[in-house]
Length: 175
Image (cartoon, rainbow, N blue to C red):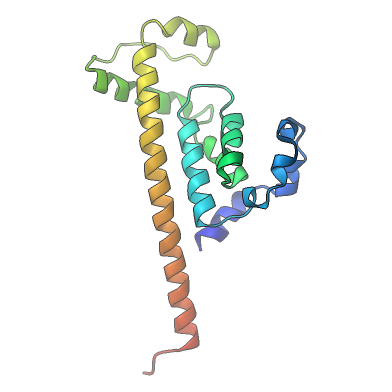
């Protein structure tokens, strides 16, 4: 079942609550809905994590955590989903976002060398910045919506399959 698969990769909620960096959220982390994994909270957390994964900012996890709390979606899953864009996947993901922005704006893609530094980001904001940011926003919205619908569909499919297995175990078909 999809729920069991996701739970294998999520950290213990008590370990997450004990992180000093999350102390800024105070008692808000004690809401049990932030730790419960059901179809609504998983799909919302996946969507939220994908939304912020395409933001070219260094504090994506904080944003995911900050929005997971008022939206009452699974906090660890939303934070973990943000890590789809990690230091290894950022260059191709953000280059793809740049290409999407260039296609929308009708500009031919410019040649540039990606560097993982603030200096490069600030310097390139004048040349490729608007195209890149538009691509990030569009990819963020599209992947977030598709991720929500896809996880919702897969969760329902998983539950339906589990119910069929239960029924077949209880009432085996006569041969």
